[in-house]
Length: 129
Length: 152
Image 1: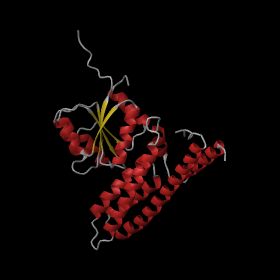
Image 2 (image 1 turned 90 degrees about the vertical axis):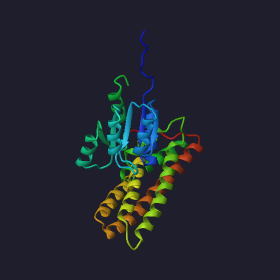
Image 3 (image 1 turned 60 degrees about the vertical axis):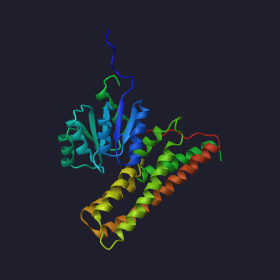
Image 4 (image 1 turned 30 degrees about the vertical axis):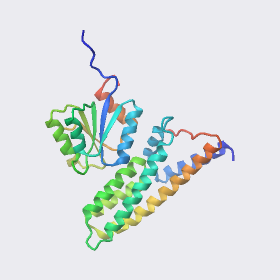
């Protein structure tokens, strides 16, 4: 008999160089019963994937030192990661948004995310959410 | 003063901060994230914001006083501050950061100096306001009351 592979808890990765912003999104996810991991830049996010971690959602800040969100997203897609990647930024220009989408992002939104906004993202990941 | 009176005073003060644009809806979001498991969440996040910003302001002043101003360095600091202020809902600080970055992009020293003054002013204002708000909250708690939930 097939064993259901559906996880009981969604797992998300929050990638942001700003500690306060990162904390906010982690806390928001935890409040929604989502397991939250965090990374300080794109490089750390890529490292997590390389070590075999799997996520249901990645929240990716666009502007970060070491490796920014666009480059990290491109790398993750090249590595075959199909996880939903939502880019986050503030007052982004159309070109910046386009660069992120072309790198393989699924959506790009203004940060910080609100509770209802995050719920709607999580519903796209899992329609039973 | 009884608890009800204290709670009304707290609410009135908080409402003024929203009305004057010192805080925005993100602060309400922050308050809603606070629960039994993390009763001091807002205080912790805001304290982190105070400490972080103070350090950044110090670094910014130092960077701006160099004979040859490195606008890239300044922009990176202001970017950090913009992210932190928007995550706690310190609206006016965030607004100043946006203007600051514009001056930075244009390598406008005078604009940066003005923005720096405004930044220090807005930061000390929101710090003072929030510290007073927390004091009011402490008074409510000491009187045996609880902090009312604010509606989004």
